[in-house]
Image 1 (cartoon, one colour):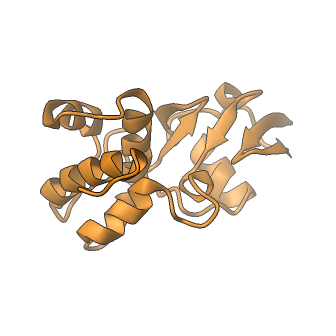
Image 2 (cartoon, rainbow, N blue to C red):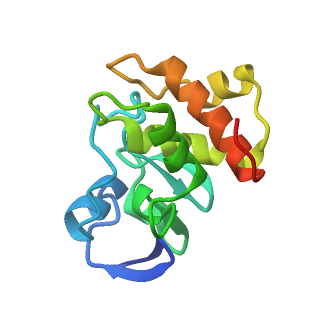
Length: 155
């Protein structure tokens, strides 16, 4: 048994400690917003927060999450109205959308640590999050938009 808190809710899951957190979230808890991309922590599609820090769930064993707070895209906001989710829609970021949960979770960790990121900050924080559709310019614009929204304004 592994005990963890997922999106604010205490969970006890009967899984092997070495099972990747990705499969605990998707298969055991039914939280399918976190995506499987490469299985080697190279693409970022599976990014979640572990005690506020972005991690790749595909290579993070369930045991590493024991006693910690896990936040998935489903837990970012109750109504899907987090500034990043709003900005993603306003800027019309997604094309296929597959990588977007991981992109948003990486961006959320960035904005939590740097509320006014520069382009260089964004590029560094988002490195390793691959978008096969190439929406990187819109992703950067949406992060700037979300930063403005978090401050109560619009960009």
